Length: 419
Image (cartoon, rainbow, N blue to C red; front, top):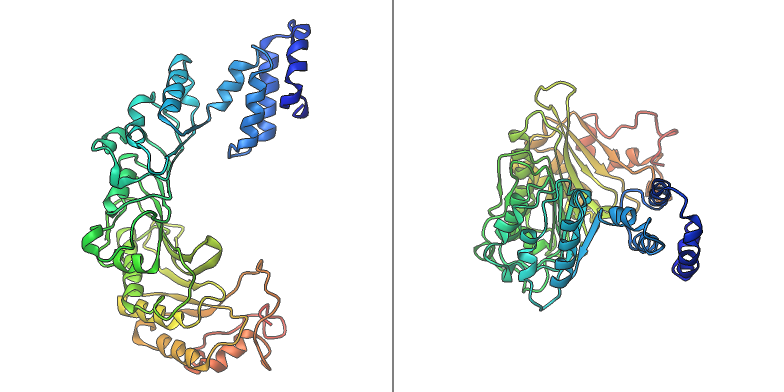
């Protein structure tokens, strides 16, 4: 069926369509529905849209149903395109209610005022789930952009390659669209942020927002953390993505930044004592996480008692003492610390520093200190030397931590997965 509707076959199909005119329209609509179900799962990609557009050109009976499905995803690239889409949505009753994703692409250096006011032209889209702005320059926004976008309520808001000079320029858009998941991609087009006086406070949260993803350089993170504010609301997850490699002496050396991140997590816990919460710090991609602080929700509505800090495998080893120090200073009480499984040698001074940090007063509430590893990771072995397993090696490298009964493998060295 898919092969039959490719563009080279359109002429042949159009010429023979009359021979099937006796088939009811409902049957053709079922055929188009079947094609859509076969092509799409959750996301509408370009090849699928092209094939569906080909369906709409086969005959008149296929056009309404094909357009009906095509309207699930709208992509705007110009003011003229906005006018065309608006007219089509207004002419066909119920078509606007089919729209699930709206993607607006901005031309670099061009007039973007039409982007600022686009929602004022579009009909109301009651079931919009995903709104994406690509390449929008918030420093050149129309004065009434936030009033305009108040017309668009969406579950997820993505700002890709945005240009902004103040954090409020992007966070305000998240508030007016009442989004639940807010993703802000790497900032482009402006010099590096120098101070918090330039950017203003970073206000995190809102009455609808539950998850936020922020992409920042380490320097931008250090500036943003100086006066970020946690707004009361439904926020549950904060994911900080660093847009640079974890290299250089300056990277991660500011202890105060780690303290502010831990304080942010502590504030989340205080705001939602019975919620399941997390703060994640990653580098470049979700596959290079550094560490993760989270709570384990109780089956009842009682305050959560288990708070965990988990280090993902093979982070820069020199960062671990800095992070532990920041958590200790923040007075964020943890019940569990999961250290990373290392596959390469680490300097003995770093192990001593980690051992010292975990022995501080701030970690006296620990019920567990063990090793985290990903069983699905492609790593082939661990640096255990003459030890039976990695737990045994860690116990020798961190004797004070081991003296508290930590770093034990439950199945014994012979059966330990970290061999």
